[in-house]
Image 1: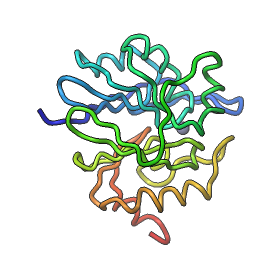
Image 2 (image 1 turned 180 degrees about the vertical axis):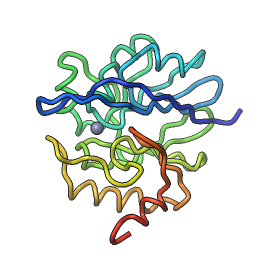
Image 3 (image 1 turned 90 degrees about the horizontal axis):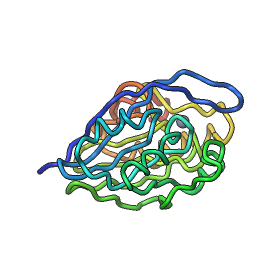
Image 4 (image 1 turned 90 degrees about the vertical axis):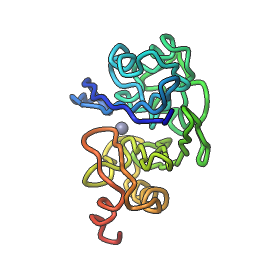
Length: 204
Ligand SMILES: [Zn+2]
C-alpha cells in the first residue's frame, strides 16, 4: 500500500508580539491506510482527526512552535497517544503557548522519520523560527516547508525569534539543493515547486 499525502485547510488565529491575526493553516497528513504522521497541529483537533480517519497516528511533527502550528498539539496527543516532535531550538516559542506541557521527542537535522513505507528526512532550516524544520519526502517527490518557504518566497521574519539572513541561508543550503520538480507543501497558502521558487531568487 503506497504512502500518500492528505491535506486540509484549518482556520484560526496566530498571536505573537502582542498582535493577533486571522490565519488559514495547511494541515498535511502523510501515511498509508494503516498509519500516518500529522504535520503540525493547527487550531482544531476534530478537523485534524477527520483527516486522519481510522489510521494510527505515529507522531505529531511540528515544523516550528508558532501558536497556529502547535496550539492543539497536546490535545491531539491526548486523543491519539502519539508523541509530539519538535526541534529543541523552538523551546522559547513553545513556552509562549504551552507553559506546563512539553513536547516528547527532539527533532534534529538529518533525522529520518518512517511511516507507511516511506521516509521523511528532517532538514533544520532556522530563520522564520530558530527551530524551524522542513520534512523532505524524497520518494513522494515533495517537501513540507512549514513557514520557511511559501509560494512566492521565504516566510516572514519580521517578528521576535526570526532572522532574515538565516532564513535565506537555510533555503539556499537545505531547500534549493533538492530537485527542481520537488513539490513544496507549505504551512499557509498554495503549493509551489523548488524550481519555481529558485527562479524568483536574484541569485538562484
Ligand atoms: Zn510561523
